[in-house]
Each structure stands twice: as structure tokens, then as C-alpha cells.
Image (cartoon, rainbow, N blue to C red):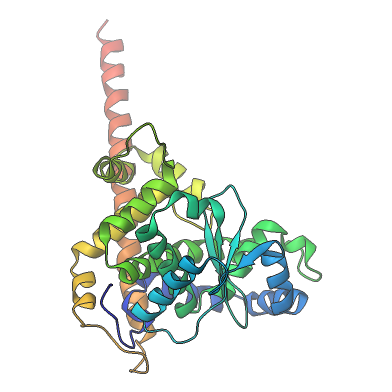
Length: 322
């Protein structure tokens, strides 16, 4: 069993860009109105009906092994408020924590089929991280936008492209936070990384997968390519709620390498009820995170421009010398 993290506060694992992006989202003009209308249009009962009408609720007599695993995750994270857990028949490997007033967790059957028990622990810890961080309300909003769109919610129409983009940007950063929670719930970095590998490429009984090669691939995705590749990386995720699995693996590996994971497992972390972290600290850390990403993109563009200039100069010299 992993070490129990007594009274651990969500700020222990939350990515600074997650917290800063969420607070920026809340400050957008019209966001409160969008959230109010969506919640009044559907309500808690409507959300449960939308996502769980054809699912199985887990309990002592229904998927009892999965029920025990959830109880173990709750114990490790020292979280007393058990969320309902549902298994939904779906061919897509995924899970979610949704709801407005009383969040609940839905795990797709394909995700369970794909993962071993240690990896399932990571998955449940990830979703519990969403619950503990208060992500479920905003995750639900993002999912509704993807599935039914603003046009189908009376009074909203197409008012909110900036809100949509900001919401999806936050959602991707929230996934990075909860990836850390999943690792803390299992305290097994290999199992956490294997989850990303399997979510990216599945499994096959007559061939092998190599986690080290996947992590090399993750590094290549982040480091290789020119300016056009950088643009594609931005556009490819603009309307996605999740980062690509290679990016998630690389981000989690970086967090472990900072030493933060080891400190938390050894008991050095803020407890619930302690002084809240100042928002200015979130913005400062997030600014550093985005600054590094932006600097990388700028350097890539500079390299591309230098390459184009050199190619043009060489072509011009060759032409004039003939």
C-alpha cells in the first residue's frame, strides 16, 4: 500500500499554470453568466442523467474489486468524501470527474480493459485529484461545450469563443495537475508512465511495448521540428480538453525530477486548512512556465528564419555566379 498522505492539500500537486489559467478564466467578461446559464439549464440531476444513464454504479456488490481500489485511493489521499464511481460501456479509453454540486467519477470500460490494477489505481487517483481540486464544475462545462455546444443552451449562442479557448487551455493544464495526483495515489512512477503509453497506443497480446522508447518519443515531440511544427502543436490542441499523452508523460517526468514528488511522499507538503497560497505566486510560476514555452517557440522561429535567409543567400549567390 502507498504511504497515506494525511490531510494533503491539493495545492501540493497543482500545476501553477492550472491555477493561474483557472483564475484567468474566472476573470473573463461573461464567464460567470455562461456558467450560471449552463448550471441552471442542466443542474446536477441533468448532468448525472447525461453522463450516467447507461452506466453501472460501483459498490461492495457491484465491481467489488474496483470498489476496494477506490477505497484504497481515498485512504492514500486521506479524502473522506467518497464520490460515486460509475463504469460506462465505451470503446474509448477515458475517465472523467464531472458534476456541479456533488462530483462523481465515470470510468469507461475500455480504459479498465487496457490497464492493469496498478494503472487503474493511477487512473482513479487522477480523477480523485480533479475532485479534490474542485475541477469537476469546469470540466463538466468543457465537456458540454464539446458535446452539445453553446448554441443548444438558450441565451448563449456563439458569444464565447474566447471563453471556449480559455476553458480548453485551463482543462489541459488541469490534466497535468491531476496526473501528479494519480502518481501520488499509487506512488509508482512506472505505472503512471505506462498509463500514458497505453492510452497513446493501446496494447496487443502478440507484441511488446517499451516505456523507455515512449519517453524518448515524448522528448522528440517537444524538441524537434521547426516553426511550422510549433504552430501545428498549438492548433492541434486548441479545442482539446486533454494534452497529448507524450506531453503528459514528459511533464510528469519533469515534476518527478524536480524532487517535488519525493518530498511529498516523505511527508513534506502543505495540509488542508493551512494558509492559502497567494494568487500572485501562481501567476509568477505560471508566467515562468509559459515564458519557457514561449522562449522555446521564439528560438525555433528564429532558427527557421535564419535557415530561410541562408538558403536564400546561397541560392542568390549560385544564381549570380553563373
